[in-house]
Amino acid sequence: MNRRLRKFLLPALAATFGLALACLATELLLRVVDPIGLNYDREFQRYRNEALTFDWDGKDLATFDFEGRLFRHKPNLDLQLGSFRLRTNSLGFRGNAVSEQKPEGAFRVLVLGDSVAFGWGVDEAATFLRRFEAEWNTTNARQIEVVNAGHLVYDSVQEWALLRDQGLALQPDLVLLVYVVNDIEPSRDIVEEGLGRRLPDPKEAVPDAGDFYTRVAPWLRSVGMHATAELVLLQSDPKARFLAATPSGTTYEPEQFGHGPRGWPRSQAALLAMRDACRERSIPFVVLDHTLPVLRPLPTFCAQSAIPCEDFHFTAEELHQPIYNSAKDTHANARGNELLLQKLRRIAEQLPLPR
Image 1: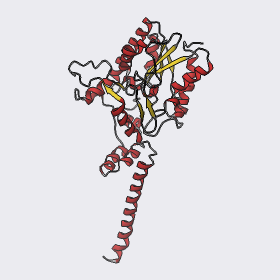
Image 2 (image 1 turned 90 degrees about the horizontal axis):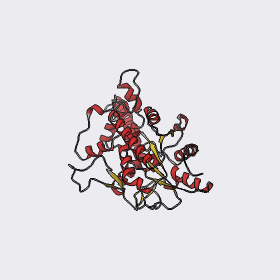
Image 3 (image 1 turned 135 degrees about the vertical axis):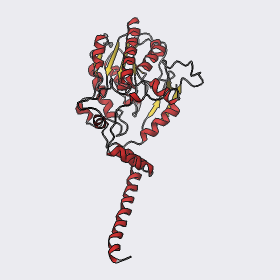
Image 4 (image 1 turned 45 degrees about the vertical axis):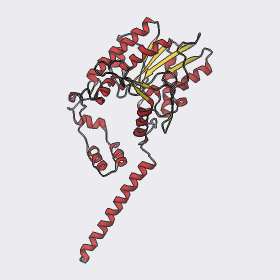
C-alpha cells in the first residue's frame, strides 16, 4: 500500500469504525435507558396477553355478534405492567370492588371511554377519575362512587354495548363518556381483520407521502437497530406527511379520512342509543370531548341531539408541556392527569352531582 493511499484510507477506516461504535452505543442507550418509551410496546403486548379475554374465543365466528362487546378485562386482576399497576374488580373494571346492587343512598357515576378514562400508564391513584372521587368525598357531605369502565381500544359501539349489557344494571345516577378519536375507529374492523375475516379497505387508507425519516427507519431495522429506528420515526411529522400527499388547502378532518366516513356515523348511532337508554331511566348522560385531532362536528351533533357536551381538550399551551408518559406513549402521565382533573373540577359545576 503506497503512502498516499494509506494517508487517506486509515483515517477513513477509523472514522467508519468510530461511527459504527457511536451507532452501537446509541442503540444500547436507547434500549437500556429507554428515554423514548420503548417499554410501551412491551407493556401493551403483556396487557393484551394477560389482562384481556376475547368474547369470540370458542364461538362460531359465522354467528358471532361483532356488534356486541368484543373484548374485556379479566376480573380480579393484579398485574404489574412495568410502569404502572393494573387492578380490576370482580366486574373487570379498574378500581376497588363495586357491588352490582347499588347501596341505598349512594350516588354512582359511571364513566365510559377508552384509554384516557382508563388511565393507561399511571397507577390508579394518579388517574384523574380516582383523584376527583377522593377530592369530592373529602370536601362534600354527600359521597359519590366513580365506576371507571374505561377500556383500551373501545369505540362508541363497544361503549354502548358495555353500557347496555353491564353498565345500566349498576343503576348509575350519572353517565359520563370521555370521547376521543378512537370512538370513530371501529373496533370491529380491527378484530375482523386480525381474525382474517376481512381485508383492510384500500379506500380507507390515510394518504401518506412518507419522508426521509420513514425511508431510513426500515433500513435501520434491517440491520438490527430497532430502537434507533423508533427514534428516527419520532422525528417524522405525520401531519406534514399527510398534507404533502393531499391537494393544497386540505386539512385533516378525522371524520373525512380513514375509517372516519364509516366510523363517525356508527359513533353517532351509538351516542343516540346511549342517550335514549339513559333518558328512559332518567339518568343524565354527558359527553366530555377530548378528541385530538379535534372532531369538529361532535359538539354540533350533540347540541342537535340534546346530549350535553363539555370541552375536555388540552389547550395548545398544555400540549407543549410534558404531559405524556413518553415520546412513544402519548397517554396522559401524572401531570396530564392533573390537568384533566382541573378540567373535570370546572365541568363538575355544571354536572348534576349531589350538593
